[in-house]
Length: 498
Image (cartoon, one colour):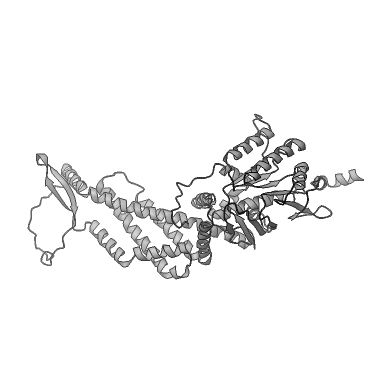
């Protein structure tokens, strides 16, 4: 996932506003589509979507790896399954350890290593068969590592060590006399190769031996203690080797899991005929934002029909003000911008025909909330408190998405509060996308527009039909609430009009 660092799922830091982003942008819908019922994939997607890459080069690096995955989806899923199998089967071996003696650790570690060698063989086979079909830097380096480190010599050496650790010819341990004539310096030794004379039946070797009676429990316990002392260092070494290979498979599962999640999401969207594209990322503060056919992926995942896409050209603007008819697609467009920004900075494709944007120093949302059930504070208090928290954390180059902010008070006060906040943030280098029905706010910003703001309006055709498209246009003093009244009350409205 990255050219110079590992993707550590356990150490991944989620942003402090992760819950707000999940709620306002409906991220769980996107993450569930990526997970396809797998909790591990859900956790990986959740961490990756908030990784927030701010280097266009790093974003393009992931895009190229993902392009390879799209071109070779079966191979990528096979690689992922290899990692899953290794970890699942290894967990069964260590699942029931009742005694942590060096003997038991060595025995189970050897079993795990035998399993890992088998799985590494499968990994090598996949690499040999399909490495030539991958072009990205990430996969090229991965397959080169497999070819170099998992060569025939490695497997031959591993097989020899594992055969030795099976102790089919017994256990050879050396020791020396310590203080009080007690044993010290126990060490497990490699069995010497037996000569052809020693392999002949009835041919005895020189040496001394003893036999422990069948019912001598103390004798067997003493012998077991000697073997444990001699095999302690070897058991630790093999256990560390197991930990090392387990860590490799955990990392492989996590990083491939992100791309498998991307494939799952892409399959869902393209099955409906929805377009997806790789975005064109620009540097922080360059002021780029343009799209064609941009749509809300989460909405598309929850409805049968295709989502309506929108075009926007907002390069060089610090404020995008969105007004227009109720239920005209304003909030949906706002979510589509936030989702596209997060997906782009995770190195993913985005839900659009084309998309280009500057990387952001962070994505923040300020959407309207329901009334406080505890009645401890009013809606305006709650809105101001959340905006204060955002102001404490936001930085130049960030993106703020506001949906009906400060509509809980009267229009004059709400407009003035929003106007001062917008001015302060945009002057500090924060890009603001603001959906509002406050005409005083929208018209005032439009009148003072010096070319650094874009004004979009939800399209409404004669008769009240919504197209769910946003067009450039001056804010209007009405949101056509009468259309909604007519839809809700129907015949009663017609009788009242008559």
